[in-house]
Every structure is written in structure tokens, then in C-alpha cells.
Amino acid sequence: GVGFYRWLHVNYDCGCVLVRDGDTHLRAFSDRASSLAGGGGGRHSPDYLAGNARGLAANAPWPVDLGIELSRGFRALKVWSHLLEHGTRALGAAITANLRHAEHLAALVDKAPTLTRLAPLSLQIVVFRYEPAGLLGGGGGG
Image (cartoon, rainbow, N blue to C red; front, side):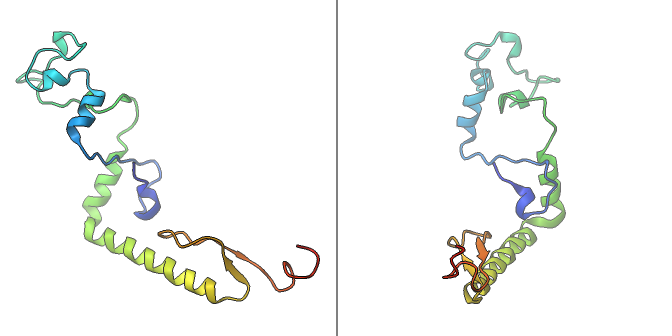
């Protein structure tokens, strides 16, 4: 899954799953897999769950074939509409700019005498702490 709310400023309650192999994904969740390929019912499905050539039961896959949870809202709509509104080029540029900002912040932290970076730069995350003079050094109060 991808957290689009982090970089792309989509509302928090959104979601998206990137699937590498659609056939494997379909076989993992669908009990109608063989019927989708043109056979009768699926491995354990009755024939009435087989796809039809026309009508409401036509066209495959059905949403039920792609996952086990059907009671959630359509979270991907927010991601889709955001991509449609702004386009992948503009969103990619925003991510690139954010990565550059993180690199710049890391460089500023490295130069500042009262700041210490606590981890290597990881994409857009800069982990650092403030160390005022005398607080952590030989003052006995470590």
C-alpha cells in the first residue's frame, strides 16, 4: 500500500494498493477464478456465481474477486481524483522538491553547532536533536 496522504496531500482516509501481478492477485482472493477464465464456477463456488456474458453479473472481475473486505468506503477515489486533478508530472515534481528540501535541511543540521543528526537521511525524513552548549557535554548532567 501507499500512504498518499504523506507526500501528495491527499486526505488521510485514502488508500491505494500497487499490484505487481494481477493474475496472482486475482487467484489469491477470487473463489471464482476458473469461472473468470471461461469455466463454470470457481474452485468452491456454485455455478450461480459464475460470470455472465451480459447483465449485472457480466464483466469480470467483480470487486469481491480483488479482496476480502467489501464494507469499506471507496478510498482509492480520493487518490484517483487527486492524480486526475494535478497529474503525475506535477506530483512527481512536488516529491522531488520535498526530497531536495530534506537534503538541504540535513546539510543545515550538519553545519549547526547545536544540532546533531541522529540517522542517515532516508528519503524525506531528517532525524536530529538539539544539543545546547553545556547540556550534554562535561557538565555532569548528561
